[in-house]
Length: 337
Image 1 (cartoon, helix red, strand yellow):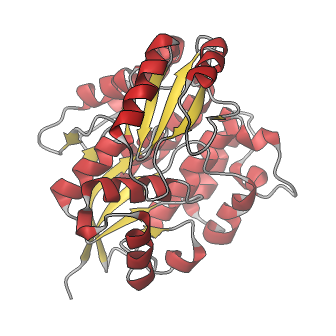
Image 2 (cartoon, helix red, strand yellow; image 1 turned 180 degrees about the horizontal axis):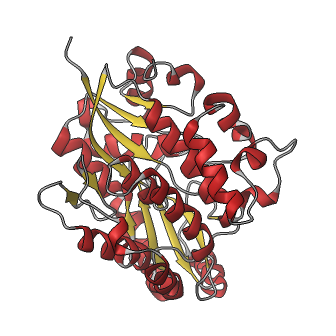
Image 3 (cartoon, helix red, strand yellow; image 1 turned 180 degrees about the vertical axis):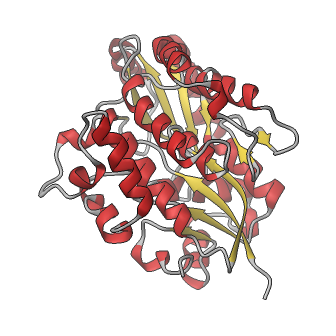
């Protein structure tokens, strides 16, 4: 039987929350990779992932970058390693924001240990930035389509208040700037379907305000950790890094330069992954499933497989899941042995 092709998506910050507490224990207890990650954390004098994941109660400590980033990376990477390779062929890998570091490891552009070290270290480095934060603007309506006129008005308000685009996320836009600028933007925005949501503990990611983080990363992570990806790797611009068309130096430079300092266009990454590789399914690694809506909104924007609205997407998912979320118990079993 021919293998089904899958586009793998790695999640970013904000996906390990109270419902995900215990994710590693539930799905990856006894994993050799988890033991390696715990050892690396222990050698550095940090709380192990097993201890954090096994806490009796979810706490604000789980949301801090130095803990959230390695937890999310470990959950996603171990999910990737658990995929049933006898049935599924990974044709491309991408990720959202911090998920780029996981995507590097999944695609073989860095080793499993180096991928974890990058995610773990960037959890700390990402806290080095000029003052500021992020907010999520929901632009899509109930049918998951975006009114171009509304988008133009939002972008005009951003320009007036010196707020920058941070992540393009389907029918949502993550914006970044100083706290004062974000406050001013909220007062100046046109009516949205939901009020803007500030992201607690997040800096002005993917903007020039992260220059200190970029400089720290370049000093910390060696270029010789990088290699050409073994499978196509789609970055936050929609560029495809292929094995024989990429250099390790260019990949290192993008990862700790453009990827940190410029907007991350997850919508573009997904559009390229869907159109260029035409996968039989999309697999969203755990933890959580918050990216599922954004991926669905990209499918609607593309009218892929005649998915033209939220309702059509839900109906398709009910019949035969095109998007499989490994953080969703009812779908996880589809892609693991």
